[in-house]
Picture 1 (cartoon, protein in one colour):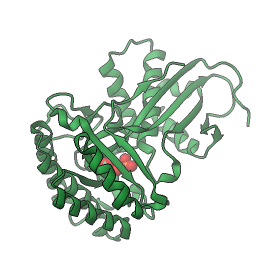
Picture 2 (cartoon, protein in one colour; picture 1 turned 60 degrees about the vertical axis):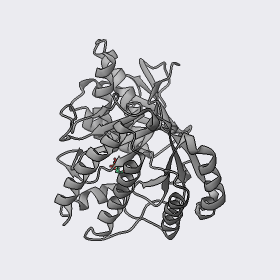
Picture 3 (cartoon, protein in one colour; picture 1 turned 90 degrees about the horizontal axis):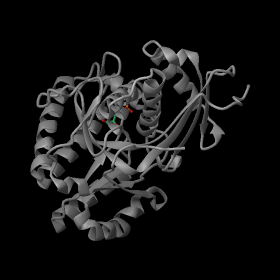
Amino acid sequence: MTQLQNEALWTSKWRCPSNIALVKYWGKRDFQKPMNQSLSFVLQNSFTEMSVELFKEGDQKVEFYFEGLSHPFGERIESYLAQLSVRIQWIEDYNFRIHSRNSFPHSAGIASSASSFGALALCLAELHFAISGKEPDTPDLWRKASELARLGSGSACRSIYPGFSIWGKAQLFEVCSDEYATPLYEGINPVFYTLRDAILIVDSGVKAVSSTIGHMLMNEHVYQPSRIAQAHQNLNELYLSLLTGNKESFVEVVESEALSLHALMMTSRPSYMLLKPNTLELISRIRAYREKTKIPVCFTLDAGPNIHLLYFKKNELEVRAFIEEELLDFCENRQWIDDRIGKGPERIIT
Ligand code: PMV
């Protein structure tokens, strides 16, 4: 292996957050397009920082380092770049050196593909405009980055914007697209910008069934038509809650979406289950706490056993005490990540 020695011809560095879906994308159409629309918000403290340097010399297409060490994820990036080079000519002309690090421990069972592909896509989009000699408007840069991120990992396209965004053609939103995510900048009730997300780590192990397989199983799923209809209805209802500041309906839709995602896994053929006994214990404790205190807390889930406990800044003190006293005993090594709704990606000046 020849290490790339000289100064890079072009460099770009970005920090990109992870995101958590409230209305879940589950199932694909065509190439990396969603079977249904989804809505998410970006996190603040869970992010990837990535630098991309371009060289003309060297005999290796991609050198990829994760936290300073050469890493096999480079192979996935190499095939992603090969696929992109059909659309973006200059990719063929350069070799890439990429350094990446995550803010969250990789043993936390947190999927890092959204923040990683988000960061990579932001670097590529910035380089694209620079190499083509075009001065991008900021919305052009975001849109390009969101589209490139989607081609790496669907949900990554929603990591590009601050706050909330929607991906997928939606009945309510004519501007939304299957190709890239669209930010929801206007009209959101300010209380939703005070959202907190406590990520409770139930199990940090590798999932038994990957999301790629899960998406594929939706192709023949007996509930496919009703799931698509449900996602549309839930998105409309959730959007209305975000506009009006209705926390009760927010809680209802968010939990229904989380459990629907896992119900789809359990009713796939073949069927599988990613929830663990402690996930169910945490869910019942969160519901009992809400019932008893009337504090608007709720949970959501990714395609895995870990719980995202959502609550509002106003209730921070009580909910943190609840987490410490009642929930951490059900987490692996009492691990959790203290996160919140975020301000979106940041370009890092080197
Ligand atoms: O982007 P992917 O292919 O890793 O799929 C992720 C799907 C969920 O995280 C389960 C839901 C979502 O909308 O993020």
